[in-house]
Image 1 (tube, protein in one colour):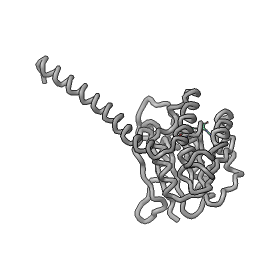
Image 2 (cartoon, helix red, strand yellow):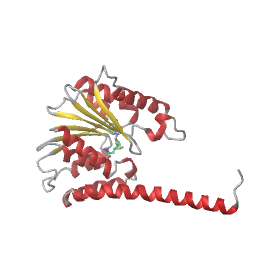
Image 3 (cartoon, protein in one colour):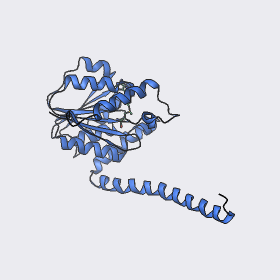
Image 4 (cartoon, helix red, strand yellow):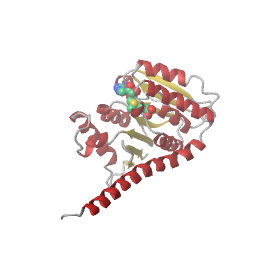
Length: 252
Ligand SMILES: C[S@@+](CC[C@H](N)C(=O)[O-])C[C@H]1O[C@@H](n2cnc3c(N)ncnc32)[C@H](O)[C@@H]1O
């Protein structure tokens, strides 16, 4: 079909306008959510958040840390699970850990598995003095420094452990799930980030993920999401963030 020049111009302008609207609409959408979340956080908590964020910026790794909306959502899921203890596999500079700790019951403990030497030390310092932060007062973080796959082998599961947030090396997600299913009992929560691998799991090309990582993530997603009516092992769902969050509640 041949368009007149005028028609082409109108279509081009409309599509630019649409793109701009979609882009600004998305930002406004997130800003709207974050404005509620920020209002619910104390100035002391906000300051800790900024410290964790700034350190990830300094390390040039801010992009691999969760956003405020994702962190807040994870925090509330943990709160709803009424857990006294929780684990995080892959903590970086503690941004998500702050929110996991916030979600725990009074005097709760968060176990942060982190293999990077610099990050492990940074986490210890970040959580050394939480007494002045209302959301974190009386709660503590134990940093387990080293490769989580090795550390978990000999790690004793603490009482009251309500679940795991998985955000470490993607090729090990199935190993982590195997560990969880063999060592945890009763009802527990599994939350995992990056389960879309930037679209690799549904075939997007030109991503940086290896065939092995994609195969592992597809198996991980299948095992947690495949819950036919006669075998309701997990109550689970995806949250369609850009990176993909998977939430699975193991039925007791
Ligand atoms: C995506 S970042 C975690 C981001 C953090 N959860 C947040 O949202 O702020 C992944 C982290 O996992 C750590 N990591 C990678 N492989 C690991 C392993 N095998 N054991 C423990 N930590 C690991 C990395 O050092 C990195 O700090």
